[in-house]
Length: 496
Image 1 (cartoon, rainbow, N blue to C red):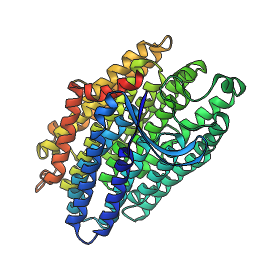
Image 2: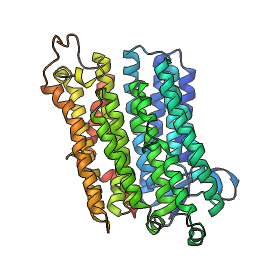
Image 3: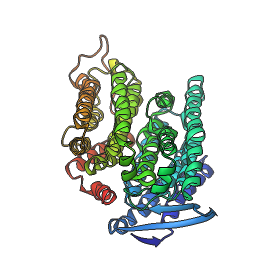
Image 4: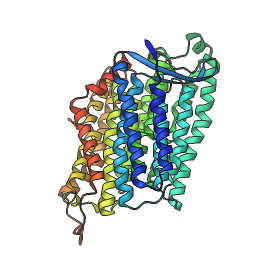
């Protein structure tokens, strides 16, 4: 693997930090403040996009900040795996800047400077995670994301907001410090390094180390899986619906861009580049992981069916969908891994569309519950059409992005030497549950009878600053469903 020393990874990460500082300094001038957010987002995306040809040519970019101990450094690395997350997160930040301006101003929200500052800092942490060269650097930026998103969850500064934020920070910091940090220290003691392997097969453990620690290595694996609690795996998932008290742009950030994607990105990075496919196969870690996250997929979907609050239903949908990513990697087959990794992008565009729609509905009508929305689609056709498109993606229907995920996962299950029937049944059942909790929303919105005495008088589409990002995100979900090659190029570079 060709390695090039380049400052570009550092520049991309620092762009978000610089943007947050400029936003904070421009607090009394809203237009200038939001202009800095936009400039930072576009600059970050441009830097990341400039690295695409180099990465697709098979090269890796690295930049070391400083060395702490032998095998322990703060270093950035950009490879194909990094780009799956970084390209999506940086592009969606651009859409989120426009959307947030319309939402926050439309509802006359307080503390908009703090909001935009923390939003930028969250992207600073997320891109830092994406470009981490080792487990230590990843851990540092993982914790930065947790700290910087806490004020966003507590944004409303009421009892509900503080309780949700408390649950959020307690879950994420206790699992990171109580499970992930000890596991990281022990991995360093056993291997002498925390640097990620150069491919997904080898991992960093030698056979001698595994033979001498045949019980400890699987325990470390379990600690890593649960230590990254942002991945939403049950039973460490409850922070996620609790965080729904935050403003909708924050929910979109949590569920599509920064927080949960950081969780599954870290989880799959460790599965593939610390333990590796060969070791996971030898220790039979893949199948138990697949069945364990299958429980999360199905149970979260069942709970989603019972939720009338739109954001709550979307929250449990996120918990379920995240586990598709881990399930695909846990299959340890080429198509399964491809399906899991490409869902990082597919889910991001579709889920941010759904949360953007939920926010637009609230700004336009102040309605939060699905039972109040019958017939509302005829008043807000663009918003609910986008919601319907994103719902099809979550279900896995062609020609939207989620179909590519489901297809790859189904093929990956068939490639398994055993247990393929069990995984196929999980995928079938979860798809039917997806239909059960998504399809009625769009159907009722367009064809349902309006509630008695409700004429939706004065309700119209949300401001263009909100509707345009919604339509762009929905359109991209369709484009990457019909033409998935762009993201699949990165994914196939990972699987080799």
